[in-house]
Amino acid sequence: MTLSRQHALALFQAGVAAADPYAAVERHIGKVARPALIIAVGKAAIRMAEAALHAFGGVPCIVVTNYENAKDLAGATVMAAGHPVPDENGARAGAAVTQAIRGADGPILALISGGGSALLPAPVAGVSLAEKAAVNEALLGAGLDIVEMNLVRQQLSQLKGGGFLRLAAPHAVTALILSDVIGDDLSAIASGPTAASLGTAEEARLILEKASIWNGLPDSVKVHLKAGRKAVAVTDGTNILVGSNSQSVAAMAAVDGAHVIETSIVGDVEAAAKAICDACAPGVTVWGGETTVMLKGTGRGGRNQELALRVAVEARKRGWTDWICLQGGSDGRDGPTDAAGGLADAGTLMRIAQAGGDIEALLANNDSYGALDLAGDLLITDATGTNVADLGIMIRGA
Image (tube, rainbow, N blue to C red):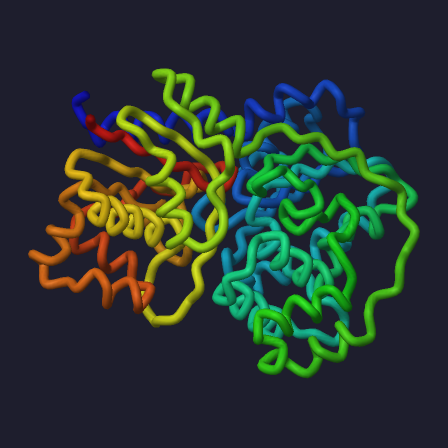
């Protein structure tokens, strides 16, 4: 088999294309009655809103997306905000969305995609945006999975965990959802603004205590979580899944009949690298998932970059000499960097060493970006306009 980086990139691009937000909304918009208001939030919000406005011209529309994906959209108010760390623009967007939903005089169409949790911080009364951001930063470095992080975020937000439903009542809410959550739990995507809460304030506190970050949290957050949130009766939303990680993995596999790792690649990146190598026989193998990184250093990087490097380390341990591994975020962004992930091969670790890098020290410092940069193996795609979690490809020679 001839190994080709271009082929790995083509497979990745097939997975991204399968999650095209415009097409996803277009396939399902016929199920939606004409709304009085459209709210689109997430990394795919622009393209999702374009499709909805094509179907429902003249309906008021607010779009909230990340800076990289923001652009003017006729018929809509577009607001750009920070991701993955919430910022003041996100707070302003949250206030605008809250006011618009409360003021709507009929049904609401919500277009939800990954990233919405950070883009609409809307902290609860008594908790400042800076304090909520401090919690989010602590969550990102604690090695928690996305469901645990979102459960905590929901308890500190006016909009997450069914917030759209509470604000819209008695009007109905229909949501078209592009899933970036493995397993497609609709209450976890963008922290579930149109779905029931993932848990309670008490459960959030226990998660924070178990992760050993409770004691370092702002006092206002502790007070709110200890007090809990009163339940509010709401009209159930209609949630329709329009795209997902598993659909993108299937699209990659369909290109040339690749083997699929059926179990999503999740959890700690080091264990995930071993699981990937265990599952990859000679030929082409593809997978999806979303791993976690326990931050111990001060370097730059993201879970996809670190996973690509740890696959390289694991492959060297196994004596593999003929392989290529692409690991990337479908949104084109991995952590707070300009890279989508990494594109490693059998020469990656050698190139790092030749450039003066120590792979073990770089990994210990969570400096996967620096390591891949030394090797020339950063995966740079620019923002893709969609988000269905992470995609991986291994092309392995005999």
